[in-house]
Image (cartoon, helix red, strand yellow):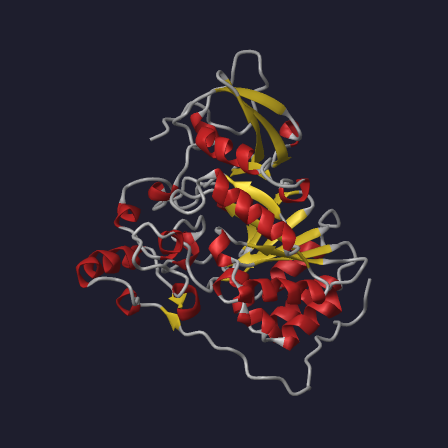
Length: 393
């Protein structure tokens, strides 16, 4: 056990001015939105908040109404449909203190920030950005104390919101506290800032120095990136990944399959390949959670598997190591295969011991987009904690 808090390294060397982005929180400021669309967008953004910046908006081809970056960030009227649940994976059941989730034995999530660099329209935690939400705690002392009391916890994921929106000094203080805990081997930071504002990282030598200090050969820091489409992998984004790797972090990518953004094998294969080239290989491709407001972005399971299975064999093995999973309330369920009759699944991680690693088979249902919509075949293992047979729509 280390003694006093490890110092957070802040450089004193002269540094070039950071490249600033201009954040936009009002849909009326979106440069490519027509006046006739504005009333509807304002109505949507009153329920599900809008935020972006001038760097990211410049990636949009405004002449293409189906532009994938536009679909990702600009509100849509269908988000107001009465559909889904705000907490589709029942994260509330895993909350052991404010801002602290403990679902799997060795991993704890600290929700340490309730702001993102921009807001993905399909976000599964959009409830955090709504008024009167109290799930996030900027004071992580209770979470750190909880982790100290639980020696089985070897991994801590800083999430939210986006931790890289926080000031570097405060983020460094949190990482320093976690590095005092001997049994915490890995500290992860979940962030879409490498896509939304890569200069936040590239132009902050203090942040890179902090990572260099705390990502050691024995205890690495991981940056869990969130690129959804190859067009996000700009020159600036690639420089950002290179800077993180140069500082000693390990970078991986995870994202959902999203209607209108990456729901075809060519797009996925291109993204997986490029990510492997720059040292940020795909980790998970997630099935989109049935979250309130997300109906226009959902892809059925069988269709998603078809796109994924074609993408992972299109390039070298290093770009095809991803798993296709659902983050269900009962655990992380991997889709292993689909044939004419069945869907083959396995618990990659489980909240319940009796499900750990269990293989099971469900009847093929091309309309299903979540585990609850499936039905186990007769004689197959029936997982604990799943409410099978729910209607798909």
